[in-house]
Length: 179
View 1 (tube, rainbow, N blue to C red):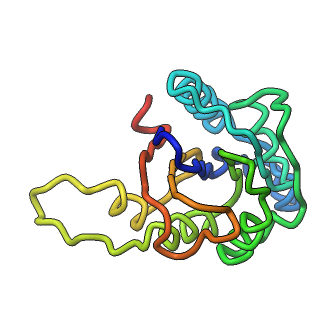
View 2 (view 1 turned 180 degrees about the vertical axis):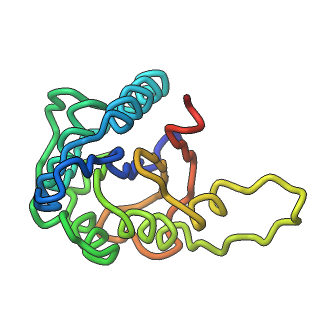
């Protein structure tokens, strides 16, 4: 956590189930693997004292179940139908409406929008590494933002001023790396 800076947490919902092929996409529940990932992310968030002031969550069942698993009964949670199917630009527009007094926000959403939002806000000038070097967190995000992944960004200023290249990637974690 960066003192004085605003914190933005971007969480992609955990793995959803395809057991019911006839269920509308909006109504898909978490799969067993997704429920296990939620436990890992919840533990990570507790260990790192991640407790956002405001939570903006898509209305899809899998995002609501992910939120309930990582931050059960969170007092600042808002379920917003407009976040289901929102583009990265629409997510950014929603963040622009966050009150200036709010210091931290968690967005629980879907790909490809959450991945594109992280890359846009960080400026994603992803450095090309050598083949024998480990990938940087931004390179990992550029390649894939898997279900259950959590990116932590920090920026100075007001939510209304948040723009492309205006945030720094502070942390990035995936359930697979925590298992």
